Image (cartoon, rainbow, N blue to C red; front, top):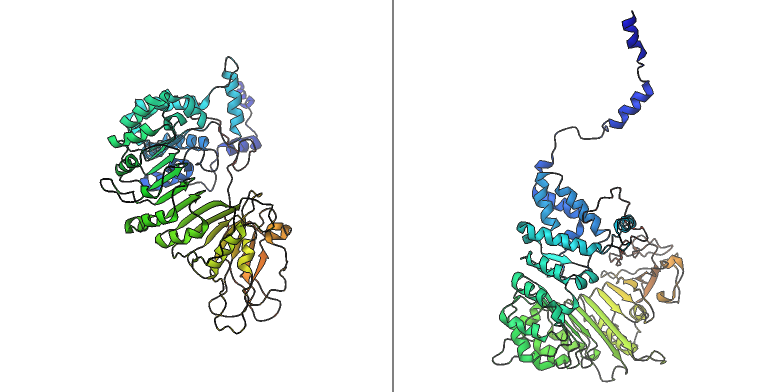
Length: 566
């Protein structure tokens, strides 16, 4: 009997304790209990899933680190993608291909983890100095691409912060030597202006990376531009020239060595004139471009650009034209360029005027393909009663009212009163058989003054083609104030957005937008009459600001504190 008493001394656990312990390890009822189905996913589906895990891994733009990026914390996204690569052998090839496709090294984490990592670095530092985390990550990247040639061959884009590329030129050269398929990399400023300290970096890039797609040449880098005649970087797609001094014949020969050139930016080049675009015996033709940007180039005129665009190959390829501060191209000559650019989709024109539009009749701007127009006319003096820029906006409104820009859908102007110019009812001339011109195309107008930082969005909805007359809604406010002067929170608050709809009497009526995007007018039920509303299908641009690690906004808190690059 005493032997069995020993077993009675061990008390069985209580029911509540056993249940709690079992609940810790119990499988949820909604969990999948069958076999693992992930091996059945094709690589295409896996890649699409991993692209959502790390969006910046598919960033293949030719913009620098400061001009590109995605919302959220790119460093944390890269860490999560690295964890996916180590989860299963099947996932490694797809995840590693994305992980080394477009590499981005940031100076900080754009989330709350930056405070944790900064504190850890301060504790590990012996001299109480902050560790240069981006430089350490760049050194680790050098070891990876130089130690594994298969990973190095997958690298196509490398984007670095400014201080890292300026202070780590030797590490940058070592990383380049292990990436033969590199197409874009952030380089120090000395690389573009012929600084001797970047000579080794230039030699590595010319010898190891023949697939570079974008390059810039600043003042002092004329010898580097002339080196294109030796056959370097023949796959260049985008070239920027800033204040360079070079013979036009050498420039044309250098362009002749770039068969894939599609975007050209010329800034601050005073010697460039119309003859640079003209055909010359013994020299290759000026290349046909998709994007041409001229900034502070006083020698080029509208007739010179038109003669270049009269070439069918050039006019058929040009889609974007940007003209800024070119004194020999006044706004009154834009109709010459638009007539020659047969397939132009985007035109950005910025200039400062000191005199009004001349009284001589000027043909309207006419284009059947122009979709976006950035028309910024700035008056040289803002203290005048009648600023000279007003006449140029009247000229633009006349071109729109004449239906000379039927494909235009977006307009950016530096006149906050421009939407009102379009919405005013045209005057009825007595004893005139011809009907007055009516603006009859949907249009998004973004306007702002010289002292404003954000664009004021106004969506203009034309009357229906059926000719059915619409009535004015009795419940909608009708104010004589313009939208840019602020009409209270019912007009959109800080966003200051409004929607303009036809009022049925030849004019237009501005109605408030309650939410961030322009509110549709299709739900309007008039209080009386037989009218009907119009629905707005044009949405405003919603800026999604980058989430900052200091404000802890825009990204949910991450539980893991593991860091891929530390």
